[in-house]
Image 1: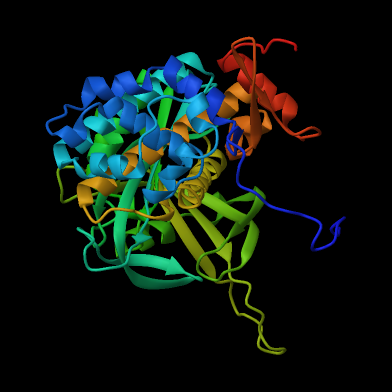
Image 2: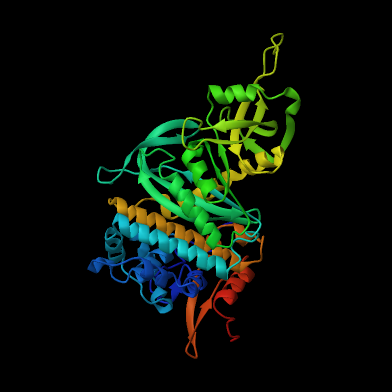
Length: 462
């Protein structure tokens, strides 16, 4: 490809007031109005200061900016460019929205979290967001470390992270996130909690799991709920929270002498081969594996605590494949083990495959980091906590929009919806109507039209 003109044959002028870069906000924010996003926030968050007035409208503005790609307070100015004011009312300046975020206290943050759960429930009632929830729902809980800079960040501390395969300590803040998914649906965010950067991964995990299970029930999870987590969440408090809420659990157990003894007691004939649909990255060696062997045994965990429980210890073992020099072949096979505790009643192989699918939450983290969580923009801890919750609302809203753009199992029902949002358009007027002129030959034009039709109304033929 090359330019079709010379360097002096093109002029540039910023003088078109009827252009927008994110026409997809029209159907997305219409969907937000249909489920009452602003009203849900107004009903939960109690304003106490002038900066906190009309919290619903301001929260909706922040969510709209995040949906369109804003990852900082200043970026929210994209809501005021070109013809955006012809499409939307209640567009606030970034300085006003920044003051609104700084108005938040810890209590107001909890109120906003409740509004976020209400929004997810409303979306699930209106959109087929979680198909198959009546049979099986997965609740995944995990944490990440978002690196921050500067000495003015409240709550910033040094926490563990992995960069380039190496474990390092970075200064940041630690969001804790619980998601809901089904075998046929991509995950949505059920609960969030912001912690200090040096907080342990499992801090506040038990209460977050309880909230996520309650939200899952409100979203139509009438069948089995399985809570999954890695070794950081293999604790008695998390397991007890699952059992009291009527959910099953599948959590990785850290290696210790008792676990090693239980694995050594497994009969050699009990191991069964398992092949994964796709290769799995071995974190220890950095190699990709596609097959392993699994077995299980009964195991009593947390014996010295009030959370004592006896369940299935499912073990996956992978043979060490480091090549040996000629003449120095191994005398006996060397295995590396990965174990998790579960009370699910599926077969050993199915339990292992299901537990491995917990990695789906990494895609949610990738979406958030590539979007609103690219930064935690404020120096105030409570403002960043509110930003995290609003990011979850934006994620769920775009996921619902993706479901509206296609059918169950379609590409947009599981992919990020930014493809349908960041599309330029020219605004025209005809007989008191606004007309959005979109690019011709666009690959996703039929999907965008379906999203528009399902959330607004069929446009008139001009």
